[in-house]
Length: 222
Length: 229
Image (cartoon, rainbow over all chains, first blue to last red; front, side, top):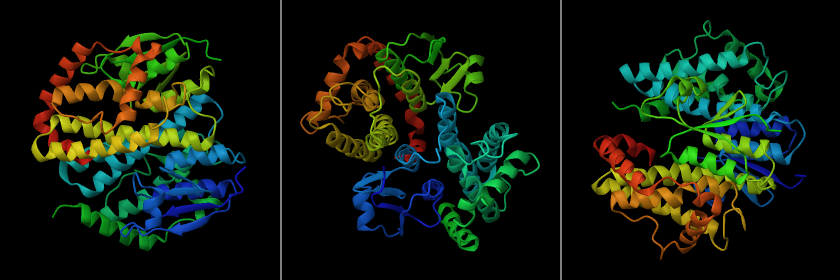
C-alpha cells in the first residue's frame, strides 16, 4: 500500500525532481525531502543512484528508483488515489510520447540550445521549440489541463514549461513562447502555476534566475 | 480488445522497429509489415509521425503510436496475453530504467566506438564496456531478464544480441568479451535461439554491408556524436 518511509533526493531548482514532488503532493503522500548539492554529490546519492549519480531519486522503504518519468509511473502504480495516467492505452501512449518528446525537443534541443547558442544554431533551436509548441497548443485547446479538468501525468511532465521557460527567456533575453501565438498554452501555464500543489512548491525566482545566469555562462563559449 | 487492423511502419535494419515486431509476435498479434525507406521518407510516415519523422510507427485501427518503448507499453496494455512487463511496480520501474539505460549509454557508445578513431574510440569503448558490466549484474543467475520467459526488458535489450556483434565486426573491436561477461553472452544465445526471435532477424550479410556503409558516412563527422557519451 505504501505506508513505508518515502524520501525524495532532489536539487532545489531541478525541474526533474519537481515533477516527482508534485506527483506525491497530488496523491497526498508524505515524504522526507533531502536536498542534494549536485556540485558536491553525497555518498547517499552515489549509493542510491550509482548508474547515473543524478537527482531525483525516490526512496520507498529500501527501494531506490531513479529517472523522473520512471519514478512518476512507479508513484502512480503504487499509490492508487488521484490517478495521474489516463485509463485508455492510447491516451497513455499519447501522454508518454509528449512527456519525453517535449523534454527532448522543446527543452534540450529547443529552449536550452537557443539559450546557449547564437546565430543560425539559435534560430534552428527556436524553430524546433516552436514546432513542438504548435502541436502542444492543439493538444491543450479547449482543456483546462492536459489531464482534463484536473492535473494529470502530462501536466506534471510538462509543468517545467510554466516556470522554467519564462526564467530562461529572461536570462537569455529571448522569446521562446510567443504568448499571442500560443494563447491556450499561455492559459494552461497560468492555470498550472496557480494550482495549490504547484503554487507554493516553486523555487524562489531570483535565486533561479541567478542559477541559470551562471549555468548559461558556463555553457557558452567565450 | 484489439481486433482492429494492426500495421507497423518499419525499416529492415532498425533495431527499434524490430523490437515492436518481437512484442507483437510474442503475443501472437497479426500485423501488416510496411517497409519504409528512411532515407527517402514518404508522406505516410511524415503524416503519422510529424514530430520525430521516424520509424517505428504502430498503427492500430486509425491510431498511430510512435517511439518504440511507448509502443511496447501500448502493446502490453492492449493485448493481455503473454504479459511483457512484470506486475510489481518496483520490478516495472526496474525494467523501464534498464531499457532506457541500455539505449542511452550502450547503444550510443558502441556505435560511436565503431565510427570514431584513436583516443575517442577508446573513450567510447570504455563507456560501452562499463555499461555492459552493469547489465551483466542484472542478468546474472537468470535465463532471461524476464525470468524463465522473455519479457519487456529482454525485448528492449534484444538489439544487443544482434547489433553489437555486427558493430564489433565492422569496427574490428570487442565490447562483449565472453570471459569478462559470461552471463550476458549466455543470455544473448538464449535470446537469439528463442523460436519467436530466431524467426525474425534481419539477414546478417545485408546488415554487415549496411553498417559498413553507415560507418563510412558517419566517420568524417563523428566528433558531433561525442557529446552523446
